[in-house]
Every structure is written in structure tokens, then in C-alpha cells.
Amino acid sequence: MATRGVSDFRSDTVTRPTAEMLAAMARAEVGDDVLGDDPTVKRLEEIAAGRFGKAAALFVASGTMGNQCAIAAQTRPGDEIVIERDAHVFLHEGGALARIPSVQIRPLAGRDGALDPAEVEAAIRSTDIHDPPTRLVALEQTHLESGGQVVPLATFRAVREVADRHRLRVHCDGARIFNASVAAGVPVADYARHAHSVTFCLSKGLCCPVGSVVVGDADFIAECRRVRKWMGGAMRQSGYLAACGIVALESMVERLAEDHALARTLAEKIAEIPGLSIDPDRVATNVLFVGTGKRPAAPIADRLAKDGVLALALRPHAIRFVTHHDVGPDDAKRAVAALRRATAGE
Image (cartoon, rainbow, N blue to C red; front, side):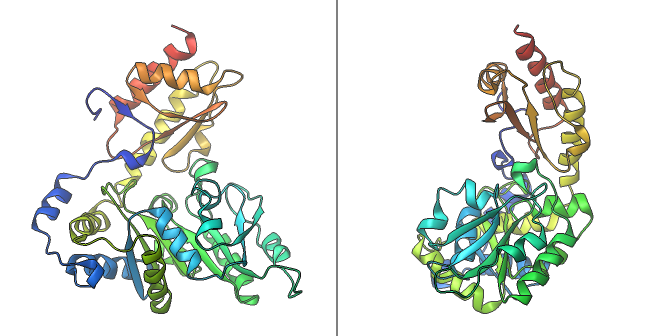
């Protein structure tokens, strides 16, 4: 599956639309989504809302846009949100929480991305005027920084119980929630039941070229539309992109299990290479972080690239690999061979 001689494990965002998606784009009926009359966008939003057991949905350009719309629609400037300290929305969205919803962060240490509900409750501010009001708890599924770990459904349930007691909202950054669903055998609607809002990405493992979706109740989605306008607004004939999203939700979800199996196989082979460290038993979905010991990760990643294997040295001593539709067993073999050469100093 290597593309133009390259095996690209940098992210599942590098996936290209399938032949079925391209065909769906060619025959898509479109309108002007800014004016609210693109029928294919409307259909995608209906399907997504139904899949998650929510009343409404909104097609947006990216996961970051979706998260920021969702949080801004449920908070006011100066509010505080409780969040896992390594959450994507906190670490990797360009400081947008400070610029768009203008909220303060209360970061808590999680366990494989899962917040402790008791610690969430302890972090909720009093009503003293000196304290910022706690307004929302943010979850992430799967949790990227912990290596694609699946946050248990029980955590969602318990956090929501805390939130309900204190009249807080719960948002889930579900960029890879379908990976979690397939890995854990839990329908996405079961996770969504315990969150007021969920975002999910179409442009990662589901192979769409562009797009994410926000789901929630009707009033919330109406407010998200307003926030989306602040961020640049809707796209025009975006039904061409939404058509890919419909194909993704109808036919690309269950195959994510193939990506998980490939990630596990890759981890098992990498674990055999001297000087590298990874526990295959902790590879839950399609993300692996490979420890490089005392050796800096960046030069190893550079050497891999020369051998046609792309991966990201996102930490000083770890390289991230992500499996997806556009890499397969041959790419994994190539990556293992390249890692052996890179660590042997050939």
C-alpha cells in the first residue's frame, strides 16, 4: 500500500478518499451550506446525529474547529473547564481555548487519559466571587497522548454523574471515537449518552479528505453554528465533502479493526529490536509510541525517512507510528526493517 515508494505512518490524517468516496462526490447533490440548502450536508448531519443518539449535528472543517465550537457554545469567557492534562484540545490546538471560548483550564492528571471522577469533583470551584466558575468537563476518546488508549465507558458514566450533580456540561473530543468503539465493542451512542456534546473526525481513520462533525441537542448545535461563523463559517458546496462522510459512516467503521491488528503486529516486531521499547499489550487501537532509550528520536526518524518510512519524533525519546487504511503488512515489514537499520547505525 506504500504510496509513491513511501510508507507513511505519520498519522491517520494522511489517508486518501476511497474509490467509493470519489464516486459519491461525483454524483453528490449539492447546494449552498451557508444558506442551509445543501442536501448532502443535511443528510450527513442526520446520519451522524442518529448514530450518536443526538438530536442534531454540524459538519465542520476540522476536529479543532469542532472542539472549539462545542466548548465556546457551552461556556462564557472567564469560565473554567476541567480537562485531562495531556488532552489534545489543551496541548495541540494552538492555544485556541484562550482565544476562542476564552476559558481557563483546570488540568488534572489522568490514567491512560481517563479522569478520576473523584478528582473531577474535587476540582470544581466554589461560588466565591474570587473563583472562576467551573462550567464544563472535557474528555477525549481515544486518548492520543497515552498511545490511543480507550477511556472506559464507566469513566464516562461516572464523570457525567459528577457533572449532573454540579450542573456542569460534558464535552467529548471524540476524534477517534470510532476506533474506541471498534476496539471496546461499545457503540458510539453509549459513550455519547454521557456527554452533552461530541466531536468526531471523518478525516482520520475513516479516510475522508476533509471534515469533522459535532453532535448534541438542537439548541446547542444552533449555537455552534453561530460560533462556527466566528471561525470562518460554513463552506459553500460542501456536499461534495459530506458525501465522503456518508460513505465513511456507512462502510468504513468496522474495518478500523484491521488498523488495530496491524498496529499490534507492528508493535510485536518492534519490541524485538534492541534499543527500542514498546509494550505490545498496551497497543489498544492504531497509535504506537516507540521509545528510543537514551538515543534522540529525531535522528532515527530522519533515517527512517531516507528509507521511505515516515513517522513522527514527537517526543525527545519516542517516535509515533499510526496505522490506517493506506498502510498494510508490507509497509509494516518495511518499517521494522528500516528501524533495525536505523538503530544499528547502518
